[in-house]
Image (cartoon, rainbow, N blue to C red; front, side, top):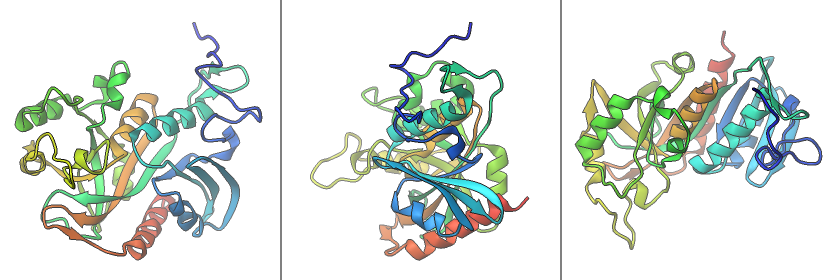
Length: 293
């Protein structure tokens, strides 16, 4: 039986908004662009015909407006899958839970999430400033393992093959793999994009194989990742949010895709320098794709 969710579990602010995001249900569009960098919200909103909503709390900044007549929201998530856990659960609550009665709605609403991010390439043939479209997200963070029945949305065969290939350490959280939305990925695909499998790491340094003053537990892990192949699929890049976005969206009935600007190639030791002009071009690309029916 559907019953009201306790105040300690679904926290609502005094103004009726959801706890962390400080948003009301009417503040968001069905299509929501997610960015890690709060400054990228202003960049994307600068393309809008008009901005009708501006809300912020902590690192979570939201603007909703229209682009070529289509209502779109852009939201800064901050860095990491822990923040994605907050963002996706609270956005889902805005549309699928009645915040007044705290009851889950009978009729569910599905949102479209498109993450626009930056990333480092793990294959030598991925050039800096290219666009990487994530067909699947692989989580090194363990977040989805806290949720029941996560295997139902996962690519369990790819997970098992990866763990065997890398001789995955039992000291680490078990990786999970979830496909993105086929419809959204198809919408964003073009001759300008490369498709691949994206790793979401729970850190920028050790979890991505970077060593400054500390050595990693497995100094050869990145070489194992690059050499891994399964049924024609290869792991192409590192970032820090995609896997949780794909996993939570799939479990909650939403659609998600991630497209990243490659700003470094880890195998070649290259960094692309000032990537902001290229990010602006990627934003234009995504906006045109999502508004083209």
